[in-house]
Amino acid sequence: MSKYIFYLFASLPFCLFTACQPKTDVQYASQPTDTLSVRPAKAPARQQVSEFRSANKGRIEAVSETPVCSRMAEQIVMFAIEGLGQYVKKGQVVARLSDAALREKIGHCRARLEKAEFQYQAILMGQGYKRDHLDDAPEKLKHLARINSGYNEAKAELHELEHQLTYCTITAPVSGYVRNIQNTLYGTARPGEPLFSIVDIEHLKVSFDVLENELAKYEKGATVSATTVAFPNEHHPATVSAVSPVIDDNGMIRVEATLKPHPHLMPGMTAFVTIEAVE
Image (tube, rainbow, N blue to C red):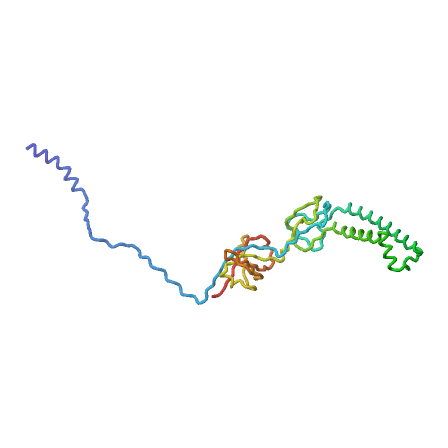
């Protein structure tokens, strides 16, 4: 009897644990899913007129950039250029060179000319002409007298030295803005070496390359629009002025378009050129 009681108490916790578990109905039927189906977007209606916009990277350049050079080797004693971006007018004196050595040569040359003139008169007087009537001598005789006295040579040398004296004053050949300064006050100017350059920013162009298959859009006279990196919200109109007659190895053609002057445009700027065409 005690054996059955022992088994009864031993199984009692198991029965209680089983009775406390919630009843769950396991259903193996397939449940409907809530997955959203992806619907293709409705294609837009075909437009009768479409705009094709092509952007080409280019560079803004000055139509002309003039170097200012000296014609003689002398020290710069006056330099009117204060810095980059200075505006100069055509004919404005921008530099002066030392003329001391040249003026000394001119003085010696004038002395030789006076001596040659005295010898010229002496030759004519030796032919019987008085000092007050030297002009009465035949022109051929006077010509020979000038040659023999060295008068013609001395006069030509003086004229050349006086002309070189004008080289000591350097003026701006064109109007524009100063860049690329290569010399300064009390430096030595050398023939052919530019002191600085003058850029004419009133006449600018944008140069860019286009693909061969886009050449038809960029004929001379076509209107394009240039946008700079510095001012991306500004669109500057330009007119195609030149097209290269040669296609490079990459199938690109160089095109140039003339820009209207604007304070925000300057040579060297990166620009993106666009054109619109109707198909």
